[in-house]
Amino acid sequence: MAELTHLESKLAEVLGLAEASKTAVDTVKGMLDESEKDLASKLDRLRQDAVETADSCTEVASGFDGKKTAILEAARETKQEAVEMMETYLEGEDDALDGFEFLTMSEAGEVGHWAIVKKLNERAGVSAVTDLAEWALLVQEEHLNVILDSSLDLAGRKDPNQVA
Image (cartoon, rainbow, N blue to C red):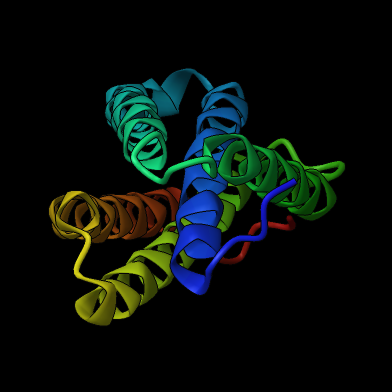
């Protein structure tokens, strides 16, 4: 398998995180109870954006001569690791708030990863990466805000004195 540069490696990571995000959103959506179904459309939007992000990353990876397969393989490894983290974090949990707390952490991680891709690409100057990183960073920052607001909304619905 081809060796990846730092930029290619980080592109693989954001691709893997986008793929894992689809799984995480599906998992958390399944945790919503009837009184929380109003949040499902927000999760659907996140999932759609994750699909678009993954597709765009794959397209950009195709532009790295002879590296697409290696990037996709590294992305699969990142996805597997992220899904395992989610499963560990949410093991035995069925409360949507716990799911949204996990999504808050994962969205913050994606913001950080995209900022790193953008920074690495400042010197590399790959125009396709520039365009993708600028778009994806805005999307991920919006996701973080939506998920954090939703987490706070869910927390506000809880009786703080009720036994968890």
